[in-house]
Amino acid sequence: MERTFLMVKPDGVQRGLIGEVVKRFEQKGFQLVGAKFMVITKEKAEFHYEEHQGKPFFNSLVEFITSGPVFGMVWEGDNVIALSRTMIGKTNSLDAQPGTIRGDYAVHTNLNIIHGSDAPESAEREIGNFFGPDELFSYDKANAQWI
Ligand code: RTP
Ligand code: MG
Image 1: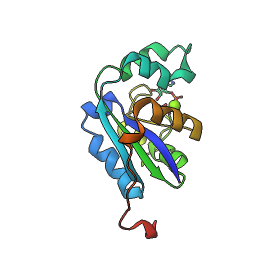
Image 2: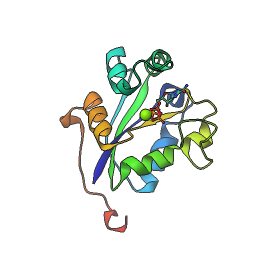
Image 3: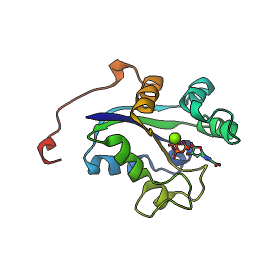
Image 4: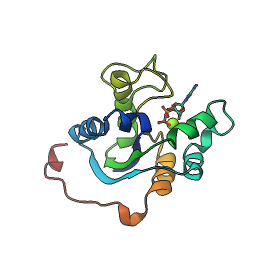
């Protein structure tokens, strides 16, 4: 069982896509174990995207992600890290296939609706950046035996 950090970015929040994003992960069969509506600080944004420090788009990425409220979530399930990346779609908007969140809703690479952790190590770091242990809740799922 894995956990991942997903975040509806400011463009997704402002376009009213929180519900659509949550719906897709609920219907897939993953379990929401934490959620927070927040404006993230520059410090947390720089830590979150630390692997991109020094790249040409880093400053504008931090500026964008701190520009308005985001909806951060922790989701749990088998292979949730890789499967959620598949559901999100490719980073480059020209490669994001229809049926994926970015393929269905995003036109530009830098306004791409949603973030998802890309590996177990980044998931752990990103979850810890935004959530304390007392903000994550495990609970029984009614139809868990079917998934
Ligand atoms: P994210 O971290 O936001 O889930 O996106 P990702 O894994 O699909 O892509 P990543 O390589 O981690 O890049 C983080 C975000 O930076 C912007 N970006 N711009 N102009 C560019 O070449 C470029 N490359 C990346 C995107 O907004 C991407 O989501
Ligand atoms: Mg990434």
